[in-house]
Length: 275
Ligand SMILES: NC(=O)c1ccc[n+]([C@@H]2O[C@H](COP(=O)([O-])OP(=O)(O)OC[C@H]3O[C@@H](n4cnc5c(N)ncnc54)[C@H](OP(=O)(O)O)[C@@H]3O)[C@@H](O)[C@H]2O)c1
Image 1 (spheres, rainbow, N blue to C red):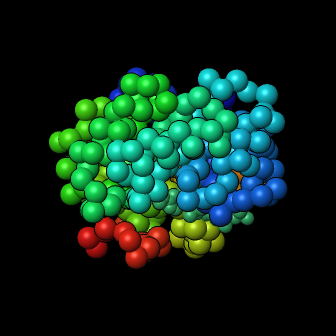
Image 2: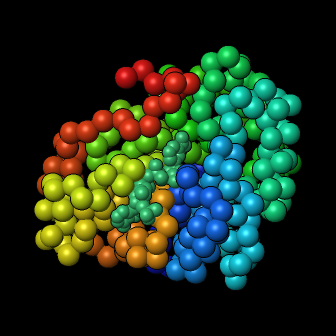
């Protein structure tokens, strides 16, 4: 693992790089080029999903990289319509084929689906862990209510909850619940879908550290013990986003960012959020 990007510990004791490349809306040659560039710069963690339609491009970038599979951390996600036992097993087998890999470091349920009993879904996930096809399993877009139910039925640790998290959406209670249950939080849309990169309050804090508003947003997540997966396509953005491990925000700066206003940016019709 590249020494420039630190890692957080998963319940298995394995390391998860604290920063990865998000790939939603990255497809085709732009996706292959961005992921290849990221791996060349020292990123070792890539986040994709069945929904993103870019597994072939990610597989190509992994093939272009000189790194061994064991040095990389690859996450993908199953669609919420594929959570029946047999659908999930078939979906996972196809994801592995598309990604040209024997296993995923992390396999997530992309969104909860109240129509399908969680016990059935988590039985399939535990089987995938036993078969060595998923090193860890987890969830995404789960609220405390979903997690409470999942923790009751899962026979394997729920390693991660990937949720929208950024200075405009400080999900304090959810973070505390996850920490209490040893679930690592991964922040999606950590730059507020790009909107926080010119936020005046973050820029003012960054000035004292010689850092940009986006770097302050990513550093705030890191100091809260949260993995971040910013999506970036240019080399300049990829480099800027990983250059956050040589400075610290003070307690006072952290508190100011905690209190910033904002709102949820990702809320599709099938979401099961309570706010
Ligand atoms: N589990 C889920 O349901 C879910 C939902 C949403 C997202 N995600 C994951 O989270 C990842 C990140 O979230 P996101 O893509 O929504 O948004 P994001 O990472 O918050 O923001 C991405 C945007 O910021 C821009 N950007 C990146 N670095 C920048 C920099 N240094 N300066 C200025 N602009 C910069 C990118 O532009 P360029 O491309 O031009 O660099 C892009 O437009 C996704 O790609 C996906 O992997 C998961």
